Image 1 (cartoon, rainbow over the protein chains, first blue to last red):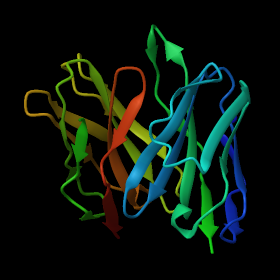
Image 2 (cartoon, chains in turn cyan, green):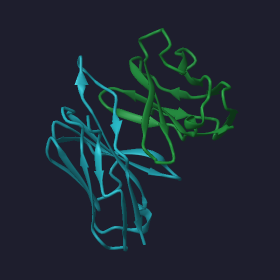
Image 3 (tube, helix red, strand yellow):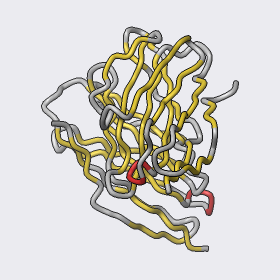
Image 4 (cartoon, chains in turn blue, green):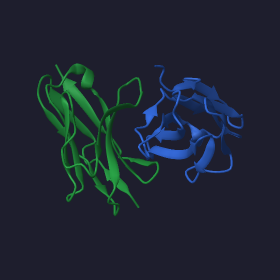
Amino acid sequence: DAGVIQSPRHEVTEMGQEVTLRCKPISGHDYLFWYRQTMMRGLELLIYFNNNVPIDDSGMPEDRFSAKMPNASFSTLKIQPSEPRDSAVYFCASSRRTSGVPDTQYFGPGTRLTVL
Amino acid sequence: AQTVTQSQPEMSVQEAETVTLSCTYDTSESDYYLFWYKQPPSRQMILVIRQEAYKQQNATENRFSVNFQKAAKSFSLKISDSQLGDAAMYFCAFRWGAQKLVFGQGTRLTINP
């Protein structure tokens, strides 16, 4: 089975530009998560969806960040305008609910974002 | 707030030897899950092992096993017969409720041939 797919794998952009990161979860998974990894803050949950609906976005750093999930097989994380401090690795993960409890989260390969 | 602490930023072990990575957590929850993830240089986050807090038996996956001490809030990972491919960052993670997954800061494991 295909795992979580993320694109692009690497993104280099200039400050002020819009950046869109994409994620395709594992088929059949009903939870989708966006994480950010930096040296200073480690791995942080930004937002997660259940059945395409955002459940908790308390980790989204500010209004420049937005995430959508238009259908069960696709999600985007957008940064507009981007800033150098947004440079990080962004992970998408997915899981499914079994026996009433969400199962293990499986991670994509990540997108390394560099904002110059 | 739930916190996860990995007190060993770096560890090294000789190939074929056994190494134990430490993890402690702080929570007032009674029902939760614990995980160890491995992140090799490719940066892919790979699940190594998971433990349900309600289970007293320690989880085992081939060469990987955990020592789960619920009262002490400790969740260490033991890697037996270390292999070169085990070299990676290892993250301990804690989850409660619906989905909140909190990670420790990681331990970098080096395998010496």
